[in-house]
Image 1 (tube, rainbow, N blue to C red):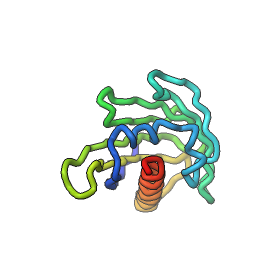
Image 2: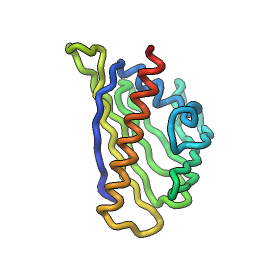
Image 3: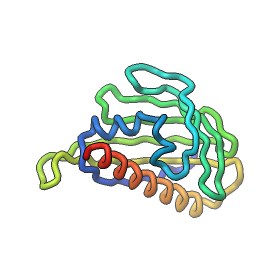
Image 4: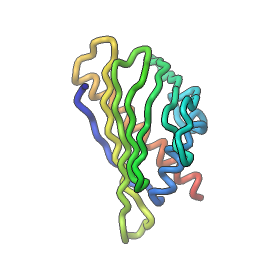
Length: 152
């Protein structure tokens, strides 16, 4: 597995509100730039899908891939692993939510996104890490925008 990249962002919402948006895979095409279609292939339990197939179009990178999800019982972590993909050999990622107490923007939650992707085509490590950082930065900003829109 490739080395992972990590980024964090604060969102003005509770962990439960954020995890609800993360778990609403059917809505991803409405608010994410790259995800074009989503199919839940294993509904899992308690409104938390166990497996999801995505079709992504991020300009030069296009892929159809399936991820298997693991949801923490405390509602603060979700992680995933690649089941299958066309251009990905492996993918491991997670969102870890940490409630922030006090402060002028309560409720607030720190969201930490970790991602490691290995493609079937060789990619220099520095370029892969830059692509992961761009993906994470975009995903976190889109997530914050969606959560805050659903909270208002």
